[in-house]
Image (cartoon, rainbow over all chains, first blue to last red; front, side, top):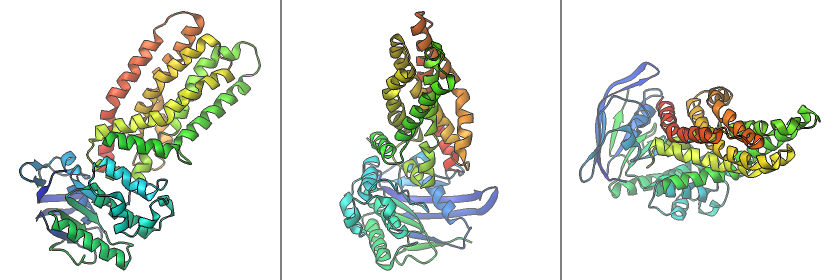
Length: 205
Length: 220
């Protein structure tokens, strides 16, 4: 995966079901930065993340990834290949064990992180052979986050990353977000409560 | 590599408890057992229709699991994760079609001799039957994937799916039964060539249609 130097969003409109949510969103995020997006329900936080991820149709060239050392990714297909996505749905396969779940993403994404280490980092190491259907909701969210560690993407897009996570889990997520950005990654998160580690925030209204 | 990982995962999911492989095989076996009971004991009648019936049953059995092809991944968020990955949606579609064929088409091919035995298909028809199931099932997986990608966002899309897919599979059933008939009557009718061509075209062209369907439903 290419190292992303900067995420540029300029004059992006957000329309859902014929309703205009936002007319003109512009911001940029550089490597190492953590942006939290805040605002009331229904204001377009999730839509904005989906637009960045290439999962929502938007006008051409409103969102551009500047790659390192040169080149850009603007087409939705190119953007999709470069983001680490954590949406509302956890994408956990219930029939597979925790290890099999992560192993699949590791192979599929030609990842770099260790599967065991990622599970251990989120306190799931002792459950690795358990089918994921026996996990609690909070544990599934932890597993979904652990997936980001094996996927090896530079831009993480997190939709409510802290929901249903307990206080040690939240601390763990904060630590990994900071570690990721310390290595030159970037994070854009839609949140209601401040993450506590953000370097910038965007208020939608 | 990514393609293989996805195919491996899908085949594994299909073979686990409640997976589509066992479902397709059980459905196929049940129908093939029921048909002779419905047709009755008149001599000669059963083996005259055996080829066509087995073809139709195999097609329906492969169709049964198609609504899971993308729906399960769509519902639990996996499809978003697959889309935000290294594969283009076209390659994703190809992998899904191959996985579906490996998980249902191939097992159906493997048990169709048993069905031939149950339906008293004459010996000279058996090879033709295997040939026709082998050529037909890839087309079912490919055409079915188009339907599955289109009905993704519809609630209870599984009910509309056969309505979209079955008309596209008419040639498969016609030529598939034709292969068996030609072998039994000893007259060449070229059905194998037509079915092969149809299957090939379906497999080559459907990934583009599937990708378009996925693109629409993912970004809706």
